[in-house]
Image 1 (cartoon, rainbow, N blue to C red):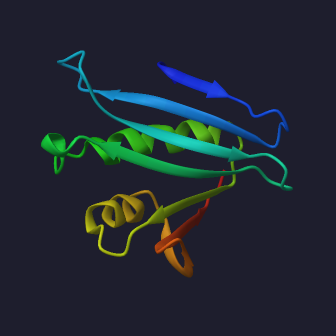
Image 2 (image 1 turned 135 degrees about the horizontal axis):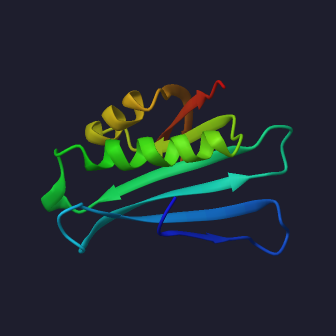
Length: 120
C-alpha cells in the first residue's frame, strides 16, 4: 500500500504498519490508519485502528481507508482483525461493522474488543 511505514520491534513478534490518509484532490493529510501485526500466533492477526480529523468526519474516509488496509492485510494472509472501540464512539463502531467486525464481550481499558475472522 503506498505511503505505508513498517517497523518491527526487537523481539520480532509484532510489526507496526501506519498509513497516512489523504483526499485524492488534496495533498494534506486528513488522518491515518494503522495495524499492529501479531506474528507469534498460529495465524497472523492484526489490531487495527483509524483516526480521521474531526472536520472530515461523516464523509466515508475512515471506512474507505480501513477497507483498503484490511484488503492489504488479507493479501498478507492475516486471518484475524481486532479493534478496540470506546462504547460511546458510535462512528467507529459503524466503521467496524462495515469492515465485518463484531463486538465481543471483552472490555480492555474501557473499550469494547471487536473481532472478525477473515476468509480467503
